[in-house]
Image (cartoon, rainbow, N blue to C red):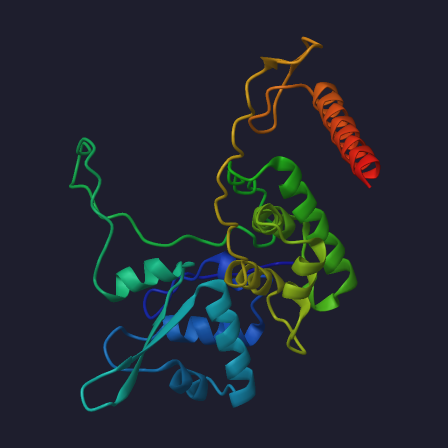
Length: 292
């Protein structure tokens, strides 16, 4: 394939290959995002108006908006102002932003400038916020490390459950990298007492007819439906210390409560007491017979 490319001198927008080649963004979603990023910063231009200008129909726009939101390129908030009126605030970015990062940018809060030694020339600048997706095609980065508080066997089992689920449910097809990244969340479910059946039902119940981002939907459900952590239970009481039987056997035993004799000696005492009671009853019966 021959390519002839001339860099434009003006009126151009820098778009990363991660967006252009994103495996889970449709062509309509990419077009909508690029079109919105190409607009000037000034002016109120909602995403729906951009879709209208780009010739994107309503159904395709709704689907593309959902994809951009799931992948972290689009964020939206609704507020109620004085008088009860509701307003909507939107943000698009050319990098993936977590919800807290997007809120910080919306509120004008940026990460603190580095406090390290100044560079040889110029002043330290504020680091950019956000990151490019790490699960796009063509990437060979290692998956993020798993949380240390989840035992490795549970992470492995959670990954196997996700893999079996993606094979049976076509709408939740996950690739190997997605499973590696989500296995820790699945392991957290198992750590909190959920069964494999609980996990499968939580991920498959009420699925939409078409899932555009299986990984994003699975992560959302694993996080949103996470069962409560089991309540803390007090440790069992310490066992009683060993003691020597106070009876005739002189055995060393561990009492359950406050008993002072071993089991056999207690049984002997009980049998002796029973025999004594029977002897007393028999003696009383004989005396009554004589007097009668």
